[in-house]
Amino acid sequence: MTTLDCLSPTQSARVLGVRGADGLTQRLLEMGLIEGTNVEVVRLAPLGDPMELRLHGYHLSVRKSEAARVEVEPCV
Image 1 (cartoon, rainbow, N blue to C red):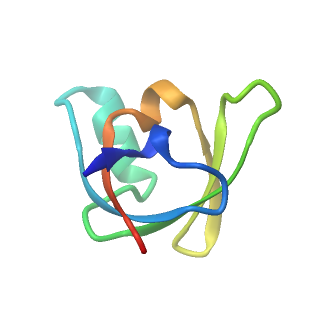
Image 2: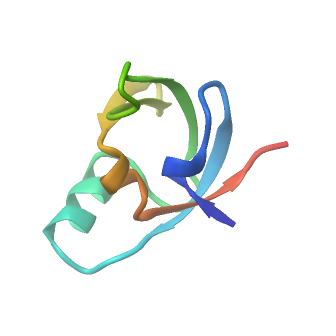
């Protein structure tokens, strides 16, 4: 198990959960980062933050600090 911020571009993973119990956690869940969701890292910004993700047929950009809350299982 790892966190979303540790993945490299083109890597895919399955979301295991989101850590925390605050407004940011709720917002990440509302944006689709729910347990069982497959997510792919499309690319990183030039300085490495934010990262662009593909999930549920759309693209989403999140800060690395936000991605660090999302626990994932990399796909092989």
